[in-house]
Image 1: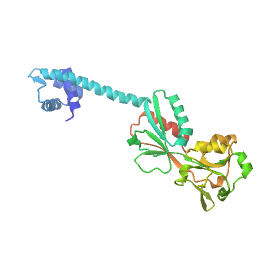
Image 2 (image 1 turned 90 degrees about the vertical axis):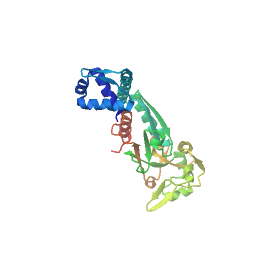
Image 3 (image 1 turned 90 degrees about the horizontal axis):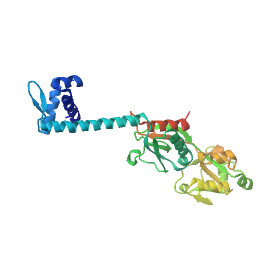
Image 4 (image 1 turned 120 degrees about the horizontal axis):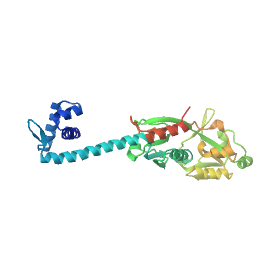
Length: 295
């Protein structure tokens, strides 16, 4: 039994004045109107109308139920209109997950630009190198680096995530410029502590493969800490291009061994499929894909 539909029919009968008038208003038969009322009375265990050959009048119980039903239907219409309003204009809270380095240097500025354009949207940006469970952890959208495992999510491709090897001019002047991956053995290399536990990036030199040296003089668990050491001439750094982009552009860091760089990793913007996507998510996806999407 569709309780809301039965309540809607009952309210229509009261306001239209008769079963026949309600039937015309609802575009159903008078017999069907009668069935809805009968279902409702059977469910409630009470008569709602006093029926006669001339008219149908509300019982005392019917009058009280009519008032309550009208309020319920008004609340339903209000809730439906609220959803429609939320679908018309980007608004509400958008929860976004992104890897730490990419999120800090690329996604956070994009979020700021997005919020400047949409003043009714709020964003909770969480930076983590862990793969979040969108549904389980309440995220609307996430940026992921690497192959996307099939989770029933929409995955929009973004520009590949690239690494770069670089050093300060003072370091290169003192120790020379490495040409091949094998040259790393005689250089001061700055290493991310994650690489001490699992090798994530493989260097290629022709047909040979090399790994970033583990016996680094300086190890740090954050890329920006390694960047600061590299800027001071402490050694060679291998970090995401997005982290070092400004330093490379200004010349404070110089790229080296560009033919040995690890293969770029795919990057995607992922979110749950929805036939009627909320504007806050739709506009954010457009914003990020427009800035970072593949050509």
